[in-house]
Amino acid sequence: MKPILVLNGPNLNLLGQREPELYGRETLADVETLCAASAKEAGMSVTCHQSNREYELIDWIHAARDTASAIVINPGAFTHTSIAILDALNAFEGPVVEVHISNIHKREAFRHHSYVSGRADAVIAGAGVQGYAFAVARAARLVTG
Ligand code: DHK
Image (cartoon, rainbow, N blue to C red):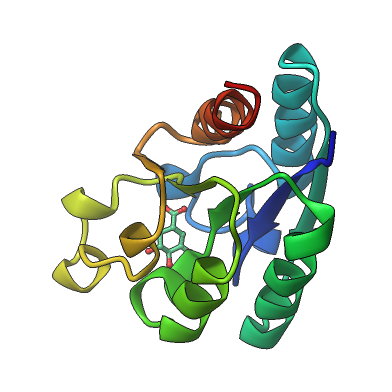
């Protein structure tokens, strides 16, 4: 079984240090460990990447066409701006789960719209970093049936 690709976008490398009242104290390494545990419980594995560069996220999504069975993505601020990431996800045939640590609907109006939600099979927002565990579990279920 191909792994679930877990992608984190811009500024998520600063998890644990940046606005902890919004994003919590857990680090990106903690999130990746959580994702691996959630995948293992479902008999699957994860490959995790983070980038502050839109093109790198797009290149990983393209590669996933051959190497991943599902994608879990927190595109960070690219959620609200990137038609290019939406197009890349539309070229991926497996399940896509979108995750946001904060509840984007409770925040500024410019965060309320997500381009990625137009493609996502499920959207999890406001569950803190636990949302990644839910997202991976859901992606695994969509893959294994
Ligand atoms: C993370 C970000 O960096 C923001 O730009 C998004 C998202 C929300 C989150 O909640 O994980 O607006």
